[in-house]
Length: 212
Image (tube, rainbow, N blue to C red; front, side, top):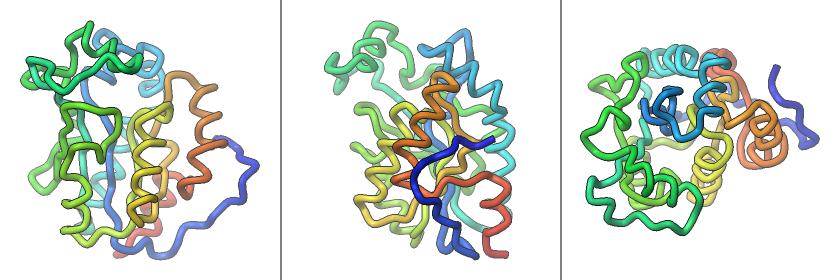
């Protein structure tokens, strides 16, 4: 069941116009329990079936000729541009994880990337638009609506949603394709923050409203 919110619900448009699927940080170094710096997040991703459901959503976008974006972390091996000015930054510096060329940064094969997909990589910062080509590539693809999937509802997805809204995009959260570090955190963030920034929906409802 999707988290309940005290905020007014907003129905999805039919059809969803000029949409792109944006998959946030679905990488081995985040999703695999033995590698992830957040075991709780890795557990929630598996428990909620985020990867297979997101894979189905991605296939629906590709089948309709709609763009699929993968927003990934890929730190430089020399760690230039990284700072210990947040807990996540400190942990990344200590673990030396998510470095370019490592298995950590790879995307699970179920998700792609397919040849038609677009990969937007960042070496520093906490959110997908910072220091990347994401905004330019979305606009070059004439995208108006972002459908968000992936992780995490703690930080990356709220940051991505806020920055997208600031740039004039409409944003939909495919809630059953997302996870946080715990069920409680996920429920709180969706109900109290993401519902203010996005239209909260499900993968099935999004697919049903994509143009044929």
